[in-house]
Amino acid sequence: MDINFVIPCLLGVESFIADEMRSLDAENVIAENGRVLFSGDEHILARANICSRFSERIQVLIGSFEARSFEELFQGTKNLPWEQWIGSLDAFPVKGYSINSALFSVSDCQSIIKKAVVERLKSKYGIEWFEETGPVHQIQFSIMKDRVSLLLDTSGAGLHKRGYRLEANDAPIKETLAATLCAIARLKPYHTLYDPMCGSGTILIEGAMLAHNIAPGLKRRFSAERWDVIPREVWGEERERAKSLIIRDSEFEAYGSDIDSSALEIACQNAARAGVKSKIRFEKKDIKDFSIFTEKGTVICNPPYGERLLDIEQAQRLYKIMGQKFEPARGRAYYIISPSEEFERDFGRKADKRRKLYNGMIKCQVYMYYK
Ligand SMILES: C[S@@+](CC[C@H](N)C(=O)[O-])C[C@H]1O[C@@H](n2cnc3c(N)ncnc32)[C@H](O)[C@@H]1O
Image (cartoon, rainbow, N blue to C red; front, side):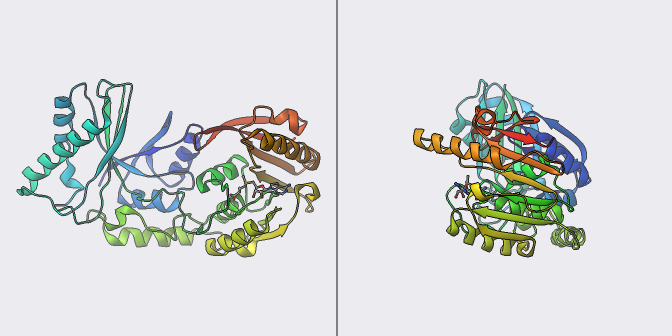
């Protein structure tokens, strides 16, 4: 089966996802602003879900067309081969968004698309009523400048949900973003990783999984696993493939510290569930007592941002301490994600490189020090 895929992504992550999809043997990979397109078969569908570290979800592109009226939207939707994916008992809810388009009422578009899919399936299956008691096939639409894209979500829960984080501390970084930071730092199996404000340990856990090539989706399930069109054995084969690629004998080690001991307990449990506990040592420590004690070291961290004025002053004081502790030296590199435009001033040095990255809706910079 030849399938076209779309991965919606936050600005700044596209090139990582595109490279990742190429490395998974996806074809015709194109990175656009805010999304990555590629093609492949049902193995690529399962592989992308199981193996992608940076993607939020994997969608099948059913079709796209121009529409400026409800009639055009209805006919365009009805012309697509929905029956190739959706069975007569399956559930097919619809959601989506519209930006800069003549068809701006999302709820109207939603019900027209639903009606059009029902009409198509009625004519294909020869039935009048759809029970929708079967597996969920979430239809997602996007209308941008009058161009409609109709997609089916294959992932279900967002792919940042790896299955290891059962408990959350106050401000955990999203797993996909933590993995992206590790990729920006070009983390390798022979590196030593430090996070001196590790909270629930997400950066260290994602770093260890990346260094050992542990597929992040090995321990969870996906929506499309229940779909009839994807043979069951495809998922088993792809899980086996991913397991066979795990690097088992690496020198990688990681050190996490934080002043909050309850966060460290959670971090420990998360690392155990992720299968990387033996690679990470956790210790209660204030950043002011931090030092890299191995010959080489890569620090990746997301310090508290500070939202109220008092918090901002505290965050600035922390940035200053970090500037003193994160000394420039051969074999050492520091990657800090922060929304503060004044970070370099507080830290005390200009970054060797900066990269814009979104933490949810918050525009941040990754400040990189490696010289
Ligand atoms: C934004 S959170 C980090 C979240 C973490 N990346 C995660 O995934 O859970 C910032 C962390 O900095 C820690 N922190 C604040 N002040 C600190 C200090 N002086 N020394 C060490 N850690 C500190 C907090 O306890 C908190 O866990």
